[in-house]
Length: 140
Image (cartoon, rainbow, N blue to C red):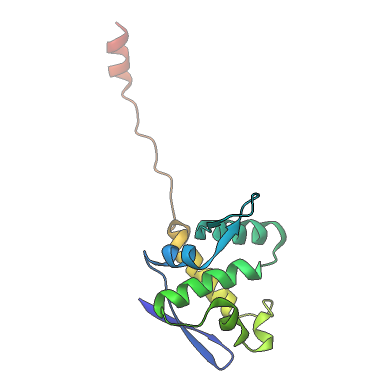
């Protein structure tokens, strides 16, 4: 399903599906100690978003932008390269403290697609009652 995220006057189509992690890994890489690069896994950014947000209540902008870009590229494979794409954003787009901004929309995408159980109420089931007479019969 394709939806849109607004940044000022810009409306960006986004989609998150089975191709999004593949798109992400093709676009972003991590440099190894020996100087070579490996594809970056989207779960690395998702983990960083959760760790930093939980620990300091400050949202990490780079991982959010990378997930946002992967979702935008999933919706439209012909978008600009990442560095050009973020250059089109208005200056106030990087103010993550304002409510209702793109970062909240991207956080919703992360929650819905990487932690779907978090939005469901999970109630613990009660344990089944043991049959005392069966236990007594087994002991005899």
